[in-house]
Amino acid sequence: MSVTSEQLAWLIRRHGIEMTHISGGSHIGSIMSVADILAVLYAEVLHVDPRHPDLEDRDRFILSKGHASAAVYAVLAEKGFIHTDELLTHYANGSRLSGHVSKAVPGVDFTTGSLGHGLSAAAGMALAARKDHKTYHVYTILGDGECDEGTVWEAALFANHYELGGLTAIVDHNHMQSLDTCERTLKLEKLADKWRAFGWKTIEIDGHDHRQLRQAFKEASEWTEGPTVIIADTIKGKGVSFMENDILWHYRFPHDGWEYDGAVNELYSHKPEGIEDPYTPGGIPTPCLPGEGADIFNDHTVSATYHPTFYTME
Image 1 (cartoon, rainbow, N blue to C red):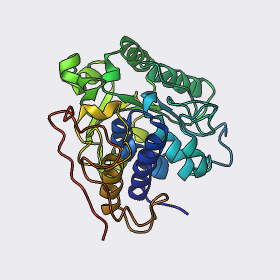
Image 2: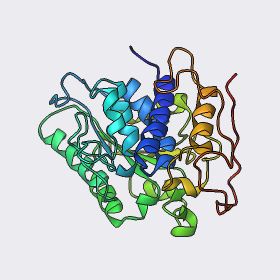
Image 3: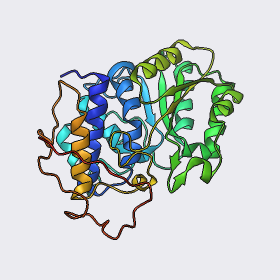
Image 4: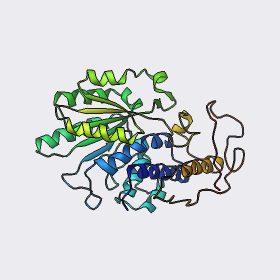
């Protein structure tokens, strides 16, 4: 079944909640923030074929912020590269769905996880395309905190020097990294001015607005004089109110009890028409509330910004 980018973004988020919940895996906040970017890329932009994942003329995609791997695995499953049942093996011993994105998975072009390397690899691929007289485009998604890495800027210099018009970088600018905001970790702004100074065509958009994403990717594909960066302003944890803009959810996963129930039902309340929830088709009719179930927050040690909203399915 073909799905729209909006439907695909919802499915990425729903799979991400389930995968991290079952596996105890981290980075649900990053998975949620990048979902719309991936959805538009895979629904409307990338020239790829799940029947031939190594097609020579396919577009290349690298998730440089490899810790958001569950989002890539989810979109690959929905596009037919792997079976959706395999998503439930995420982080399990022996699974190829590792915590950081792995080339062992069909449709993954480059293994990542150690930050700062994806853009360098993407630039190399774009240069190789030119030398081989190929027309494929190379896309890579970076984290904003990842832009602290010096190798990002070395690659940016390289791509500008070789005028790599077949290269587009997207910065998932959710303003948070690891244990704090980007600005309090290592001042990042003015981020767009930095990229412009390195010679890149720079586009700033709302990274959750699919219309803006489509237009940005169109502009990037038409610009042939050098590389393009799309700075996509996003919200960490987008889609579940109690995860949004809370650094807690960089490493935490939704535990049994009110965390999982609340996340599932809030997503369910915003489910687009035409798709089904693959795990809880009717939502969770009687969800746990804070203080119930197996959550561990009864000692009130959560962050000061933690004010969850809960949805009961009727």
